[in-house]
Image (tube, rainbow, N blue to C red; front, side):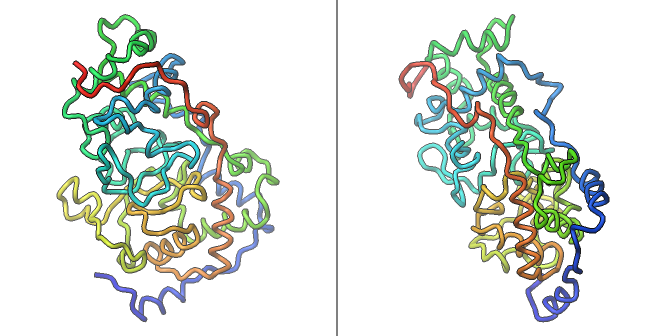
Amino acid sequence: MNRLTPAVIASACALLLPPVSAHNGDEQHLADARENFGKLPARFENPENPITPEKVELGRMLFFEPRVSLDGTVSCARCHQPSLYGIDALPKSFGAQSRPVPRNASTVLNTAGQFVQHFGGNRKDVEEQAWRALTGKVSYANPDLPSAMAKIRAIPGYRPLFEKAFPGEADPITPENWGKAIGAYERTLSTPAPFDRYLSGDMGALTPQQRLGMVKFMNAGCGSCHRGPLLGGTMYQKFGLVVDYWTVTKSTEVDKGRFLETGNEADTYVFKVPMLRNIARTAPYFHDGSVTSLSEAIRVMGLTQLGKLLSDEDVEDMEVFLESLTGEMPAHFREPPVLPPGPFTANAK
C-alpha cells in the first residue's frame, strides 16, 4: 500500500507547479480550455428517450413525489434538494425508513451528461437510475415494481399526465415510463456558468485570478481526468494513484469502489471521476463525504492523484477558478411543483 512517507512528500515537493501567468497567452489559454472542456449543452439528449415537454412536466412532478416510496417520505428531491444545488449536504444520505445510503449523493444538476451514474457506475443512465431506485433497499425501498406502480395509480391526477407523456400506450403507468419521464426532466438540468461565457470568448467572464487558477488546473494535470463539458464524469479512475486516499482524507471506512460491483481486482479503489460543475456549492466531497472544504479536497487530489503538495497560493487560485463553474439553476428546478392531490397509500393495489 502507498503511504504518506517522507520520501513521498519529498518527491511531491519537487513537483510543485511552476509559476504561470494568466496574462501571457490569453488566447492560447482559451484555446486550450476549449479543447480540454468543450461546450456545455443546453440539455443532455438521449436518442432512446427523446425529450418532450410532456415528459419533462411529468418527470418534474415525479422527481418531487414522495408518496411512491415505501413509507411516503422519499423522492428524488430528498437527496437532491434545489435549495442545496441538488444535494442534501450530508456525508451519506438516508432512504426510506431512514436506511443509510452507502455513498455520498452527488448533485443531480448536469448529472445526465455523465457516461454512467453513481460512483461505482452501476447505472448506465439517469433513466435506469430512476426506475431502479423504486425498489432500491436504501432509496424508495418498495418490495417490487408492481407495488410502486400501484401507489402512483392510487393518485388519480397522474394518469392523464402519463397518457399525455406516452400517447397511444394502453397502460402508460409503468416503471420504464417512470424512468423515462424523470430522465427527460433531469436531462434539462444544465447549469451554464461564468466559465461557459469565457469559453464563448468573453474574457471578462473570469477574473484574472480565475484564469490563473484555470491555467494551473490544466498545467497540474487535473484536466486529464476532469475533462469534457462537465469537467469530469467521462471515465473511471483509481482514487489513490500515488497515495492511499484514506490516509489523506481520514475516511473512517475503506471503500473498494467498482470492485464491489465487478469483483475484478483491477477495479479496486476505482470510482467514476466526479464532475466539477457547481463543486463550490456541493460539499461534502468524495464518495464518502469525508472532506468538507473545497480547498482541502484540492489538496487531497494533489497528493493522492498527482503526487503534488500544492502551495496555499496554488490551492487558492484553483479554488477561485472552480467557483466559476457555479451555474444558474433552471427555474423549473428551483421552484418545486404543486403535486396532484391524494394521500399516501401504504398498501395500494
